[in-house]
Length: 161
Image (cartoon, rainbow, N blue to C red):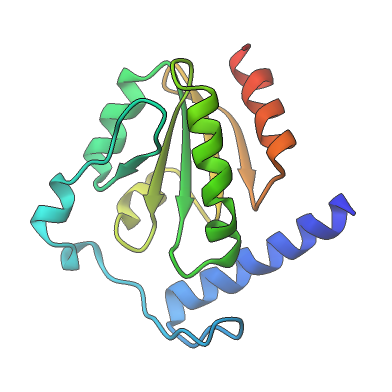
């Protein structure tokens, strides 16, 4: 069962990357999009930050991500795309983990369509990609959707909680 979930997740990641670079219609939701370039992001969007205890931090620039990386002890960065079904499916799980580990782990999300520079910095090739950072260094990476149990276990294991 787990192998099937991973294969499906890999399929969506590959399909998502094709849509990102080629810009065509999604066979699942019939949405048609082409990725925006970093220059198309409005300056007011770059300054926008949604952060509070127990919530997922919305990263709007590569500089903001770099600041988070250097100032946060335990950080999980989720690279996602709004048109990606597995990414959308993981949203409630991300929020649940942010609440559960409020004072111990910061969870941030990066829209690869709007902040492609940050995705490039981390060599992201599929979505969703979760990069676990401890004291600024990468300790683990997961590509694809995970169960709540796997997500929680990885947080405890990789951050020693």
